[in-house]
Image (cartoon, rainbow, N blue to C red; front, side):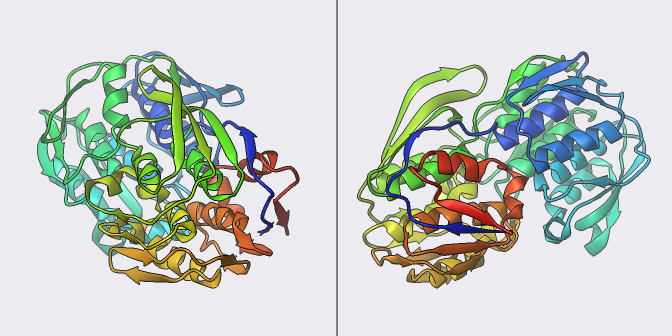
Amino acid sequence: MRVVVRPPRALRGTVEVPGDKSVSHRAAILGALATGPTEISGFLEAEDCLGTLRALGALGVEVTRKGPGQYRVGGAGLLGLQEPDNVLDCGNSGTTARLFLGVLAGQPFWSVLTGDDSLRRRPMGRVTEPLGQMGATVVGRSGGSRLPLAIRGARPLGGIRYRSPVSSAQVKSALLLAGLYADGPVCVEEPARSRDHTERMLAGFGARVAVDARGVTVTPGGELRGRPIHVPGDLSSAAFFLVAGAAVPGSEVTIPGVGVNPTRTGLLDVLREMGADVRLAARADAGEPTATLTARASALRGTRVGGSVIVRLIDELPVLAVAAACAAGPTEVGDAAELRVKESDRLHAIISELGKLGVRAEERADGFRIEGGTPLRGAVVQSWGDHRMAMALIVAGLVAEGQTVVEDTACVATSYPEFLATLNRLASEPCAVVES
């Protein structure tokens, strides 16, 4: 499937984005481990999160869809999961694979996890190695560091203080979930604090969680209790419309109910540094802070991005590169080598594809330099099978002269099935059209 993009006159209006992918995964998993039901509203009905629900069903958890984005997860309790009778397919979702490894590390049975071609190339050793130190047995490709992986848990696992070499919410979350089955505290320290949805939600379910400057500690022994959860709008999905609103002349885009967890808002900070008119209103906080976001067309300027802000915008860097291409002057991004082990090598992919659109850019080992200021020209570009690449390139097509064709866009359904429909609602006439 490919998408043909033509620049709109402007993008104007108010749109909603789907539920936060990270929060949706965690709500389903913790609901499954709780005692009593968990009612979830705003759940992201995209391939990654639906795959998590299917995997929970294979482990004996009752999951009921009550309406669009509304699910009831029947809590099996910490000790209530059942051995699956088939392989658990995580699809394209690194979050599903890594968080399930943490849960399964505490189960007294064998499970096998696999995924699609992309996921089978992604590193799992950063999770399986510390889980092995805690007592789980993991066997599989590349010494237990690539899917498919077979895991047999232990009960209890051993407590651990783990210093993660990378700041990764998936690594941290896997170990904290495993810590629910440990015989002592499990502490995870990171070079910089990653998104904190797991520790927030664990505390909300009744787990004993402590956060300090050094890291996050979960102490086993408490019971998780089912509770209602509302999933806020996904800032990573809103990012595409914020950049489009700032970059397309004459535009003003408003998005209500977006999660603005401070461990996720690096994009907002950087866009403001670039001169973007991005405003927050109607703030609220029910466990996860939310706000209404508005982006207006702005004269963007280049900037430098690196250090601790990278972990706060790691998923938004592909579309930030598009903003950089529209800015006056150079933008340099560093400390982002983690992008090489996402659904694609995003550092290589975004520089390669923006180059086809006439952007002057240089790929670096841990980032890139984009000159900015040169008009983009329509061209045929590739998504590399990566949902965030596909959507970022569609946004680039909105500001390119002539027609842009983005190939291999079926992957958008991984996180945002309604992306094109939402985008077209902001234009006076359809600006992004699917062609088979």
